Amino acid sequence: MGCDEVRDLLALVAGGEARDEERVSVEEHLSHCASCAKELDLYREARAHLALLREGDAPAGTWKSLWSGVQADLFPRKPSRAMAQFDTSLRYAAVVMVGLAVGVGVHVATRPEPSGPVAADAPVRPGPIQAPVVNVTGERPAPFRIEVEPRARFHAPRVKPDGNSWLPRVEALPVGGERDF
Image 1 (cartoon, rainbow, N blue to C red):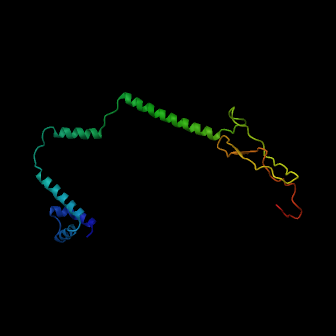
Image 2 (cartoon, helix red, strand yellow):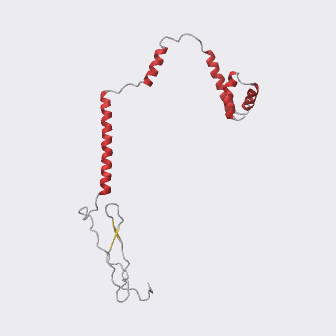
């Protein structure tokens, strides 16, 4: 037998109400399972304590003390008027704060992109990038430098030209669709 089947029979064995074959198989299991043996001891101890109980009247005040404990659990005290008003005001304040948070979120999400500088020290957006014409000698100017300007409202930064960039200008494609670039 496994522990699950034995645990179902432990209360019957502790009370002497189990059949003989069940009792024998439980005792065999208990010889090598310490946790089930401990549980059987707890059942026997509980039965012994129950046997020690005597019949008769309870001491004076027992029922009153039991009822006061049960009454406190079943019927908690009502809060005072001041606490009820404080609780109500906290609920209204929470509703107002949620409304403000939603309003700010909607405002930030739907506001238009600023047309000019946001602040006095904010940089001005550059115009479109124009590629310089390759000089006659074929020399390249110095490598270009990229400066990043963050824009408001979570847009990707733009490249700021400084005049040192080099891009070839394509005037026309060759006839026949050949490409040499």
